[in-house]
Image (tube, rainbow, N blue to C red; front, side, top):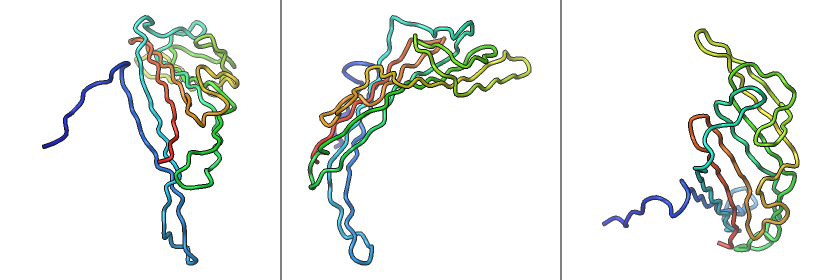
Amino acid sequence: MPAPYSYGVASGFSKSTPKTFEYLHVADNTGDVKESILKYTRTETTSETVDNTVFGAPTIGTNEVLNATITYSADEQLIEPRSAGSVPPAVRQYNPRAEASATVLGEFTASTFTLDSIVFKTLSQEKSETSGDVVKTNLRGIKYGEAGSLTLGSIASGGTIRVEKRFSNTDFVRNVTTTVAFAAS
């Protein structure tokens, strides 16, 4: 008989929890792997919540936004443990940034744009024109030093490693947060 099923999440909208097993592969003198030693595990938990108080998307300049995403991330440096079954002695997040992508109605050609009170440097603009449809522009931008709610510095004991804020002109704002935890096995 199969195990009992569970439905839904206790809070929020959705949740995903992948677990990665980090191994050290030991080769013999001919280069063939003879043993794999478990160093540690890394568990990332991604949770999505819906902000049912904020509907729609803000404008970018005078352009109406069809959809947009702001992603906060940072670089990670991990020092490998010296023995099997040990958590990494140091894991660090640094160089935070916010990256934006948006689709707006109309043409947009400025070198910067503001979304959710953050001024992004425009990395690319792609205007599309189709017979019988309105002109749309896809934008990508970046703002270094913007951390949102990321955990910076040491994350050896865990922390928030990625945050996304998703806007749509037909839905409520969605927030997606990814946290990390390390364990000996």
